[in-house]
Image (cartoon, rainbow, N blue to C red; front, side):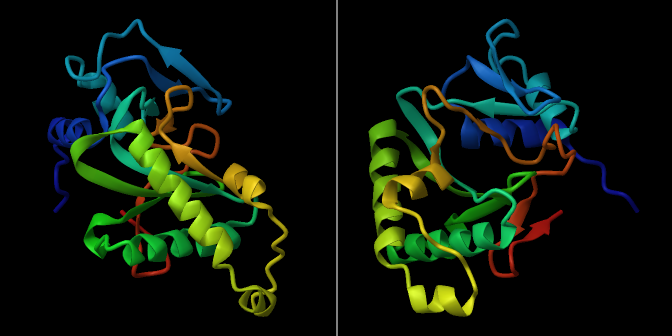
Length: 205
């Protein structure tokens, strides 16, 4: 028996988790670029936008502006997905060290070359707060690298702190959006599933 998906209920939940600013938002184009959208109204009154996202008919992203309901750490090491996975787990472990329980830490496949690590907040927080948390995470990661372990893993690691910030980026920002989970990457056509952080980041379908 196939369970019917209640897309409207899912869209409402996605709105509650992600959305603080009605517009502008972004749409990913077939070539992977993003277009800023103002003309379709806001994401609260027009749930069809999020429903189409969940049905993989389009891919929507959001900005932060001054406040946000979540933090996303965007991990992208090019074609080296194993390195992206290793760093994703490092970030998850750092969050645990900061006292955040497993059940509040989420990871998802970006659809192309990396992963998103997400934490959703009970209350809206300022951008400066997530920027502060991001800086703590990156510095903790950078200064706790075990180079002997990297040798065993045969992982080439030559990044400065600034270079690391180019591979591991904070999202959302006021000028850089982040695409939402549970749709497809418009270039690869791969689904951006949430991942099981206890099972090698296998997608939760």
